[in-house]
Structure formats: C-alpha cells, structure tokens
Length: 277
Image 1: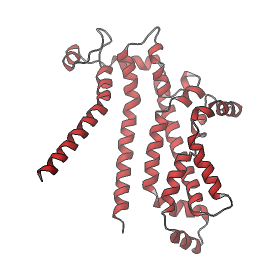
Image 2: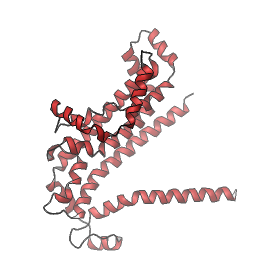
Image 3: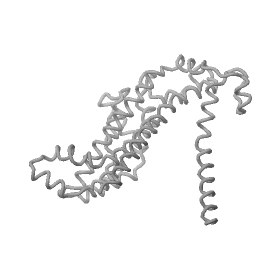
Image 4: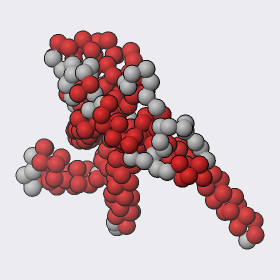
C-alpha cells in the first residue's frame, strides 16, 4: 500500500513538473506583454508589479500591423480548412473502409506512401499551380491544397472500418442512397473521431507558418503567425519585446479558448461512446 502511494505521489510530482514547464512560456508571454517598453524587460514578479502594468503594447501592435484583418484571415482559413479536411477525409475514409473497387489496395498503399514525402518538396509545383489558378494572396491557397490529407484519410478509415456494416446494409434495404447513408448514418456514428481530427487540424492550421508566408504576399492578407513574425522589424529598426509579446498573446489566447472548447466536446463524445451498450 505504501509503495503504491509513493508511486502515485511520484507520478503526480512528475506530471506537475511537466505542466509547469509547459505553461511557463505562456506566463512569460503574458507578463511581458503588459510591461512598459521603458526600462527593459524584467522576469521578476516583484519588479513587474512595481513598474505597473500597461495596455499600451496591445494598442501599439494594432497600429503597426492590420491585426483585425490578420485575425479574421487566420480564423476563416483555419475553420474553413478544418471543416473541409474533416469532410473529405471522412468521405475518402468511408470509401476505402466500406467499398470494394478495382485497385483499392494499391491506391491505398500509394496514399500511405505520400505520407513520407516532405511538404517542402512540393512547395515549388504547388506555388506554380496556385499562381495559375490566381489564388496567390487568396485564402483558398491555404484551404484547398490540404482539404484531404493522407494522415486524415488513414485515421478516419481505421475508425470507419469498425462501423457495423449490417447497419449500412439495412439502410440500403430501406431505400437510402449512398450519400444520404454517409451523411445520416456514418457521420453521426463517428463524431468522436471527427472531433479529434478536427481539433488536430484546427491547431495545425492556426499555427501554420510556411504556406501563409509563401502564398500571402500583402500585409492585409497575411495570417496572424506571419504578421507577428515580422513584428521585430516592422516598427523601424526594431520593435520592443513587450510589443512583440503583446502580438503573440493576441495570437495565442483565442487558440487556447478554441482548444479547451473542442477538448470538452471531444471528451463528452468519447464518454458517451464508451457508455453505449
């Protein structure tokens, strides 16, 4: 009994240290963003509170870059891109999991092989395609190219494989066509998988830097991550670190709220699925 208590205490202490190390950068960003640009940046709580906190850094960020426009660009590209990814990956996963067609295994193997190709290798041909389509400086260049990914198709295909085929057959006997079968029967049955993949996709798209940096060339069309990365040199020779950290805080805070909201939704669906007979 004592050995078990000691082990649990050790695990809790280890997890507490991991949580502290993980959230420490967030606290540093938060406190730095409220410090005055005069007198340098301090890492001591007593000094920070002694100098007084200010909101001027957030106002300065709004003056340097089109923050509101950049925020909505990030929000629209992340939400639309995540919805498109979840839908098309689920549709392709359904086809690979429940249909038989010539070359199915070879096509799925080819799809898996694309996972080992680095994204950087495809940048040049992808940029040429986007330019010919007229999608440079358009959010479509962030949404369409990754509407269906090999990782997402593989993940949802594995989940849909476990979906009872008898339910699909019963739906067909009742006169339900294939697309209504997918929308009305399959999608409601794989909500936990959709929520998990949607959360991963949303975070990845919100934090994406490479594709927005390449395809969005004007400040008004840039996303938050690109605009903030340019902050250190945006205001003349250099921008003070408290102003830069204010921009980072603006970009990070909505993502934390979105993650907490989706995590709660995901856990609720997993619990509901685990209690079904």
